[in-house]
Image (cartoon, rainbow, N blue to C red; front, top):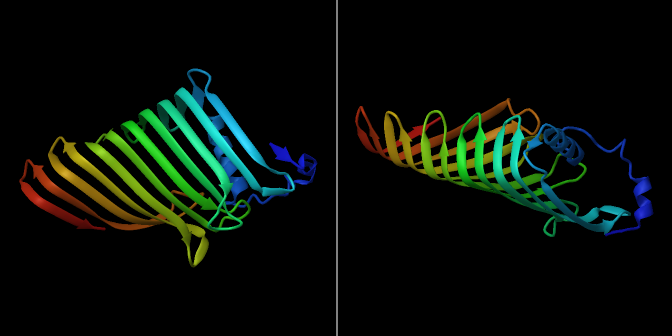
Length: 232
């Protein structure tokens, strides 16, 4: 439902901010990614929107998307279901709040595979500027496997926010936890990696990171260890 629909003609589409990190730039990046995707069968999409065209920041939207199989340049997803909600942030006037939940039965990428994945995102962001940006992410999988090892009950949590001294940079704190890790030369009861990464929103290849890695119940062909701690 759109009220004051005639005001849409006054929206400044061409001259809206497109600097890296703005909502418009992020949206264009998402559209570019979607254009490179292929579906084995037609997906189902439902969108419900409500707001006044006189105040675009007042819009709320609910999205439901399902697809039996999706092929993208970076990997393949089977039986995916996405729900997302966009609304003005109650805690931060002037910002938008995005809540998204994605479930994927099978995930295959160049980096590894995962079964029964659940991804959630809670994001507060500006619709017109790169900052402020604040997000909490979680990813859970019953099992994951890479070329190096496989693990069970994998959980990744992350928090991303703008760097206080440079709004063009983001700082992400990550915690990756896994159980029953298996490698051809070793295995462990559980492992945890904690990282702090500073990166650009658009140039993800350039980043600075530090963290630590802990393992418990480690058993290798060279010997065993009750626990191991590595700082980097």
